[in-house]
Length: 342
Image 1 (tube, rainbow, N blue to C red):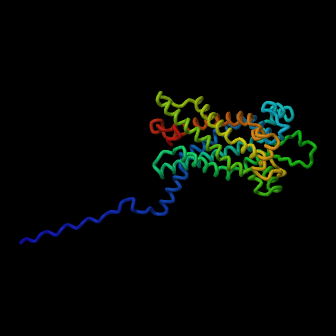
Image 2 (image 1 turned 90 degrees about the vertical axis):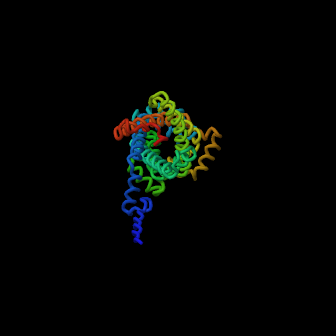
Image 3 (image 1 turned 60 degrees about the vertical axis):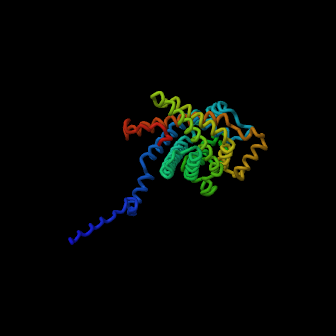
Protein backbone atom coordinates (compact mmCIF):
# COMPACT_ATOMS: atom_id res chain seq x y z
CA UNK A 1 0.00 0.00 0.00
CA UNK A 2 1.49 3.20 -1.15
CA UNK A 3 1.96 5.81 1.37
CA UNK A 4 -0.11 8.79 0.64
CA UNK A 5 1.44 12.22 0.47
CA UNK A 6 0.85 14.21 3.56
CA UNK A 7 -1.87 16.78 3.28
CA UNK A 8 -0.41 20.13 2.32
CA UNK A 9 -0.05 22.47 5.22
CA UNK A 10 -2.66 25.19 5.25
CA UNK A 11 -1.36 28.65 4.44
CA UNK A 12 -1.44 30.97 7.43
CA UNK A 13 -4.51 33.15 7.46
CA UNK A 14 -3.57 36.75 6.81
CA UNK A 15 -5.46 39.19 8.98
CA UNK A 16 -7.67 41.53 7.01
CA UNK A 17 -6.50 45.13 6.76
CA UNK A 18 -9.50 46.20 8.83
CA UNK A 19 -8.43 43.87 11.65
CA UNK A 20 -4.95 45.35 11.89
CA UNK A 21 -4.96 48.35 14.17
CA UNK A 22 -3.19 51.37 12.82
CA UNK A 23 -0.08 52.45 14.71
CA UNK A 24 -0.84 55.45 16.96
CA UNK A 25 1.28 57.76 14.81
CA UNK A 26 -0.69 56.79 11.69
CA UNK A 27 -4.02 57.28 13.48
CA UNK A 28 -3.00 60.73 14.68
CA UNK A 29 -1.73 61.70 11.24
CA UNK A 30 -4.97 60.50 9.65
CA UNK A 31 -7.10 62.43 12.14
CA UNK A 32 -5.06 65.59 11.64
CA UNK A 33 -5.28 65.30 7.86
CA UNK A 34 -9.07 65.15 8.14
CA UNK A 35 -9.31 68.05 10.61
CA UNK A 36 -6.96 70.22 8.56
CA UNK A 37 -8.29 69.16 5.17
CA UNK A 38 -7.84 71.54 2.26
CA UNK A 39 -11.57 71.35 1.50
CA UNK A 40 -12.52 72.73 4.92
CA UNK A 41 -9.89 75.44 4.56
CA UNK A 42 -11.24 76.42 1.15
CA UNK A 43 -14.73 76.82 2.61
CA UNK A 44 -13.35 78.78 5.58
CA UNK A 45 -11.17 81.12 3.51
CA UNK A 46 -13.97 81.65 0.98
CA UNK A 47 -16.37 82.50 3.80
CA UNK A 48 -13.88 84.91 5.39
CA UNK A 49 -13.19 86.66 2.06
CA UNK A 50 -16.92 86.85 1.32
CA UNK A 51 -17.72 88.29 4.74
CA UNK A 52 -14.96 90.91 4.85
CA UNK A 53 -15.71 92.04 1.30
CA UNK A 54 -19.44 92.29 1.96
CA UNK A 55 -19.19 94.18 5.25
CA UNK A 56 -16.70 96.61 3.71
CA UNK A 57 -19.06 97.40 0.83
CA UNK A 58 -22.11 97.91 3.07
CA UNK A 59 -20.43 99.16 6.25
CA UNK A 60 -22.31 102.51 6.36
CA UNK A 61 -25.54 100.51 6.65
CA UNK A 62 -24.00 98.52 9.50
CA UNK A 63 -23.06 101.75 11.30
CA UNK A 64 -26.59 103.10 10.91
CA UNK A 65 -28.08 99.81 12.09
CA UNK A 66 -26.02 99.73 15.31
CA UNK A 67 -26.66 103.42 16.06
CA UNK A 68 -30.43 102.87 15.72
CA UNK A 69 -30.45 99.69 17.81
CA UNK A 70 -28.49 101.12 20.76
CA UNK A 71 -30.26 104.50 20.77
CA UNK A 72 -33.13 105.30 23.11
CA UNK A 73 -36.38 104.65 21.30
CA UNK A 74 -37.25 108.38 21.32
CA UNK A 75 -33.95 109.27 19.63
CA UNK A 76 -34.01 106.50 17.03
CA UNK A 77 -34.36 107.63 13.42
CA UNK A 78 -34.84 105.72 10.21
CA UNK A 79 -31.80 104.37 8.38
CA UNK A 80 -31.36 107.26 5.94
CA UNK A 81 -31.93 109.88 8.64
CA UNK A 82 -29.29 108.19 10.78
CA UNK A 83 -26.77 108.13 7.93
CA UNK A 84 -27.40 111.84 7.24
CA UNK A 85 -27.02 112.63 10.95
CA UNK A 86 -23.69 110.79 11.19
CA UNK A 87 -22.33 112.63 8.14
CA UNK A 88 -23.48 115.98 9.54
CA UNK A 89 -22.03 115.40 13.03
CA UNK A 90 -18.88 113.41 12.25
CA UNK A 91 -18.23 113.71 8.54
CA UNK A 92 -18.38 110.92 5.93
CA UNK A 93 -15.68 108.91 7.72
CA UNK A 94 -17.97 108.66 10.74
CA UNK A 95 -19.84 106.01 8.78
CA UNK A 96 -16.68 103.88 8.85
CA UNK A 97 -15.99 104.19 12.57
CA UNK A 98 -15.14 100.69 13.80
CA UNK A 99 -14.50 99.33 10.29
CA UNK A 100 -11.19 97.68 11.22
CA UNK A 101 -12.71 95.85 14.17
CA UNK A 102 -15.66 94.77 12.01
CA UNK A 103 -13.38 93.34 9.32
CA UNK A 104 -11.40 91.49 12.00
CA UNK A 105 -14.59 90.22 13.63
CA UNK A 106 -16.32 89.08 10.45
CA UNK A 107 -13.13 87.55 9.05
CA UNK A 108 -12.49 85.48 12.19
CA UNK A 109 -16.18 84.71 12.65
CA UNK A 110 -16.77 83.50 9.11
CA UNK A 111 -13.53 81.49 9.04
CA UNK A 112 -14.49 79.68 12.25
CA UNK A 113 -18.12 79.19 11.20
CA UNK A 114 -17.54 77.96 7.64
CA UNK A 115 -14.63 75.73 8.70
CA UNK A 116 -16.58 74.11 11.54
CA UNK A 117 -19.75 73.81 9.43
CA UNK A 118 -17.88 72.12 6.55
CA UNK A 119 -15.96 69.81 8.90
CA UNK A 120 -19.06 68.70 10.81
CA UNK A 121 -20.96 68.03 7.58
CA UNK A 122 -18.03 65.90 6.38
CA UNK A 123 -17.96 63.88 9.61
CA UNK A 124 -21.73 63.39 9.53
CA UNK A 125 -21.65 62.01 5.98
CA UNK A 126 -18.63 59.84 6.76
CA UNK A 127 -20.24 58.42 9.90
CA UNK A 128 -23.75 57.83 8.55
CA UNK A 129 -23.06 57.40 4.85
CA UNK A 130 -26.08 59.60 4.17
CA UNK A 131 -26.62 63.02 2.69
CA UNK A 132 -27.08 65.72 5.33
CA UNK A 133 -30.83 66.24 5.63
CA UNK A 134 -32.71 69.26 6.96
CA UNK A 135 -32.69 68.18 10.63
CA UNK A 136 -29.03 67.18 10.61
CA UNK A 137 -28.13 70.34 8.71
CA UNK A 138 -29.86 72.45 11.36
CA UNK A 139 -27.97 70.62 14.12
CA UNK A 140 -24.62 70.97 12.32
CA UNK A 141 -25.21 74.67 11.66
CA UNK A 142 -26.19 75.23 15.31
CA UNK A 143 -23.07 73.47 16.61
CA UNK A 144 -20.90 75.53 14.27
CA UNK A 145 -22.68 78.64 15.51
CA UNK A 146 -21.97 77.84 19.18
CA UNK A 147 -18.25 77.34 18.47
CA UNK A 148 -18.20 80.59 16.51
CA UNK A 149 -19.96 82.61 19.24
CA UNK A 150 -17.71 81.40 22.06
CA UNK A 151 -14.51 82.10 20.12
CA UNK A 152 -15.34 85.41 18.43
CA UNK A 153 -17.74 87.29 20.77
CA UNK A 154 -14.97 89.62 22.09
CA UNK A 155 -14.37 90.97 18.58
CA UNK A 156 -18.07 91.80 18.14
CA UNK A 157 -18.32 93.45 21.56
CA UNK A 158 -15.37 95.71 20.68
CA UNK A 159 -16.88 96.47 17.28
CA UNK A 160 -20.25 97.44 18.78
CA UNK A 161 -18.59 99.76 21.34
CA UNK A 162 -16.50 101.48 18.65
CA UNK A 163 -19.35 101.92 16.17
CA UNK A 164 -21.80 103.10 18.85
CA UNK A 165 -19.58 106.00 19.93
CA UNK A 166 -21.14 109.36 19.14
CA UNK A 167 -18.24 111.77 18.87
CA UNK A 168 -20.45 114.87 19.03
CA UNK A 169 -22.23 113.66 22.19
CA UNK A 170 -18.95 112.83 23.92
CA UNK A 171 -17.44 116.30 23.44
CA UNK A 172 -17.11 118.00 26.82
CA UNK A 173 -18.10 114.86 28.76
CA UNK A 174 -15.04 114.05 30.85
CA UNK A 175 -16.71 111.05 32.51
CA UNK A 176 -17.52 109.35 29.20
CA UNK A 177 -15.30 106.42 28.25
CA UNK A 178 -13.69 107.03 24.87
CA UNK A 179 -12.31 104.08 22.94
CA UNK A 180 -9.37 104.98 20.68
CA UNK A 181 -9.08 101.69 18.85
CA UNK A 182 -9.38 97.90 19.06
CA UNK A 183 -6.64 97.27 21.64
CA UNK A 184 -7.59 100.33 23.72
CA UNK A 185 -11.22 99.22 23.74
CA UNK A 186 -10.32 95.70 24.89
CA UNK A 187 -8.05 97.04 27.64
CA UNK A 188 -10.70 99.45 28.97
CA UNK A 189 -13.45 96.82 28.92
CA UNK A 190 -11.24 94.40 30.88
CA UNK A 191 -10.19 97.14 33.32
CA UNK A 192 -13.75 98.36 34.03
CA UNK A 193 -15.85 95.22 33.54
CA UNK A 194 -13.42 92.33 33.84
CA UNK A 195 -12.47 89.79 31.19
CA UNK A 196 -16.06 88.55 30.94
CA UNK A 197 -17.05 92.04 29.79
CA UNK A 198 -15.65 91.05 26.40
CA UNK A 199 -18.38 88.42 26.24
CA UNK A 200 -21.20 90.93 26.91
CA UNK A 201 -24.27 89.79 25.01
CA UNK A 202 -23.01 86.22 24.68
CA UNK A 203 -26.30 84.73 25.96
CA UNK A 204 -28.49 86.23 23.20
CA UNK A 205 -25.62 85.43 20.82
CA UNK A 206 -25.89 81.77 21.78
CA UNK A 207 -29.65 81.92 21.28
CA UNK A 208 -28.93 83.58 17.95
CA UNK A 209 -27.10 80.55 16.61
CA UNK A 210 -30.59 79.82 15.33
CA UNK A 211 -30.16 82.79 12.94
CA UNK A 212 -27.33 81.38 10.80
CA UNK A 213 -28.82 77.93 11.31
CA UNK A 214 -32.13 79.03 9.76
CA UNK A 215 -30.19 81.00 7.14
CA UNK A 216 -28.00 78.06 6.11
CA UNK A 217 -30.86 75.57 6.06
CA UNK A 218 -33.00 77.87 3.89
CA UNK A 219 -29.98 78.65 1.69
CA UNK A 220 -29.04 74.96 1.35
CA UNK A 221 -32.60 74.03 0.37
CA UNK A 222 -32.92 76.83 -2.19
CA UNK A 223 -29.41 76.07 -3.47
CA UNK A 224 -30.18 72.36 -3.88
CA UNK A 225 -33.24 73.24 -5.96
CA UNK A 226 -31.35 75.85 -8.01
CA UNK A 227 -28.42 73.48 -8.63
CA UNK A 228 -30.77 70.89 -10.14
CA UNK A 229 -32.50 73.62 -12.14
CA UNK A 230 -29.20 74.99 -13.48
CA UNK A 231 -27.80 71.52 -14.29
CA UNK A 232 -30.92 70.65 -16.25
CA UNK A 233 -30.05 73.59 -18.49
CA UNK A 234 -26.36 72.74 -18.69
CA UNK A 235 -25.02 75.73 -16.74
CA UNK A 236 -23.82 76.93 -13.34
CA UNK A 237 -25.90 78.96 -10.94
CA UNK A 238 -25.41 82.59 -11.97
CA UNK A 239 -23.96 85.29 -9.66
CA UNK A 240 -27.34 87.06 -9.61
CA UNK A 241 -29.05 83.83 -8.51
CA UNK A 242 -26.47 83.37 -5.73
CA UNK A 243 -27.15 86.96 -4.63
CA UNK A 244 -30.92 86.43 -4.53
CA UNK A 245 -30.58 83.08 -2.74
CA UNK A 246 -28.45 84.68 -0.04
CA UNK A 247 -30.93 87.56 0.31
CA UNK A 248 -33.93 85.24 0.71
CA UNK A 249 -32.17 83.07 3.31
CA UNK A 250 -30.95 86.00 5.39
CA UNK A 251 -34.29 87.85 5.30
CA UNK A 252 -36.08 84.77 6.66
CA UNK A 253 -33.51 84.31 9.43
CA UNK A 254 -33.44 88.00 10.40
CA UNK A 255 -37.21 88.41 10.76
CA UNK A 256 -37.45 85.21 12.81
CA UNK A 257 -34.76 86.21 15.32
CA UNK A 258 -34.73 90.03 15.33
CA UNK A 259 -35.77 90.71 18.98
CA UNK A 260 -32.79 88.65 20.16
CA UNK A 261 -30.48 90.57 17.82
CA UNK A 262 -31.75 93.84 19.27
CA UNK A 263 -31.12 92.58 22.82
CA UNK A 264 -27.65 91.47 21.77
CA UNK A 265 -26.74 94.97 20.52
CA UNK A 266 -28.18 96.62 23.65
CA UNK A 267 -26.14 94.36 25.95
CA UNK A 268 -22.91 94.75 23.98
CA UNK A 269 -23.20 98.54 24.10
CA UNK A 270 -24.22 98.60 27.78
CA UNK A 271 -21.16 100.19 29.46
CA UNK A 272 -23.02 100.98 32.69
CA UNK A 273 -24.60 97.52 33.00
CA UNK A 274 -28.14 98.85 33.38
CA UNK A 275 -29.58 95.66 31.88
CA UNK A 276 -29.62 92.45 33.92
CA UNK A 277 -29.80 90.17 30.91
CA UNK A 278 -31.60 89.28 27.70
CA UNK A 279 -35.08 88.91 29.23
CA UNK A 280 -34.71 92.23 31.06
CA UNK A 281 -33.81 94.03 27.81
CA UNK A 282 -36.84 92.58 26.03
CA UNK A 283 -39.14 93.45 28.94
CA UNK A 284 -37.88 97.05 29.01
CA UNK A 285 -38.31 97.45 25.25
CA UNK A 286 -41.83 96.04 25.32
CA UNK A 287 -42.82 98.15 28.36
CA UNK A 288 -41.62 101.32 26.63
CA UNK A 289 -43.01 100.77 23.13
CA UNK A 290 -45.09 97.60 23.06
CA UNK A 291 -44.42 94.81 20.57
CA UNK A 292 -43.10 97.38 18.08
CA UNK A 293 -40.27 98.12 20.53
CA UNK A 294 -38.94 94.60 19.99
CA UNK A 295 -38.43 95.44 16.33
CA UNK A 296 -36.74 98.83 16.77
CA UNK A 297 -34.41 99.32 13.79
CA UNK A 298 -35.52 96.25 11.85
CA UNK A 299 -35.72 98.26 8.62
CA UNK A 300 -32.05 99.21 8.96
CA UNK A 301 -31.16 95.64 9.93
CA UNK A 302 -32.88 94.19 6.87
CA UNK A 303 -31.18 96.68 4.54
CA UNK A 304 -27.79 96.00 6.08
CA UNK A 305 -27.90 92.29 6.77
CA UNK A 306 -29.78 91.11 3.67
CA UNK A 307 -27.56 93.03 1.24
CA UNK A 308 -24.41 92.06 3.15
CA UNK A 309 -25.37 88.37 3.37
CA UNK A 310 -26.40 88.24 -0.28
CA UNK A 311 -23.10 89.80 -1.38
CA UNK A 312 -21.22 87.55 1.04
CA UNK A 313 -22.74 84.36 -0.39
CA UNK A 314 -22.09 85.59 -3.93
CA UNK A 315 -18.41 86.23 -3.11
CA UNK A 316 -18.10 83.00 -1.10
CA UNK A 317 -19.46 80.84 -3.90
CA UNK A 318 -17.31 82.48 -6.58
CA UNK A 319 -14.10 82.33 -4.51
CA UNK A 320 -14.80 78.71 -3.57
CA UNK A 321 -15.47 77.77 -7.20
CA UNK A 322 -12.26 79.44 -8.42
CA UNK A 323 -10.08 77.88 -5.69
CA UNK A 324 -11.48 74.38 -6.23
CA UNK A 325 -11.10 74.85 -9.98
CA UNK A 326 -7.44 75.79 -9.57
CA UNK A 327 -6.77 72.89 -7.20
CA UNK A 328 -8.68 70.11 -8.94
CA UNK A 329 -9.36 71.28 -12.47
CA UNK A 330 -12.74 71.27 -14.25
CA UNK A 331 -12.76 67.55 -15.12
CA UNK A 332 -11.83 66.37 -11.64
CA UNK A 333 -14.20 68.69 -9.89
CA UNK A 334 -17.70 68.07 -11.29
CA UNK A 335 -19.36 68.67 -7.91
CA UNK A 336 -17.70 71.94 -7.08
CA UNK A 337 -20.95 73.91 -7.30
CA UNK A 338 -23.40 72.13 -4.98
CA UNK A 339 -22.53 72.72 -1.34
CA UNK A 340 -24.84 69.88 -0.38
CA UNK A 341 -22.69 67.49 -2.39
CA UNK A 342 -19.45 68.46 -0.70
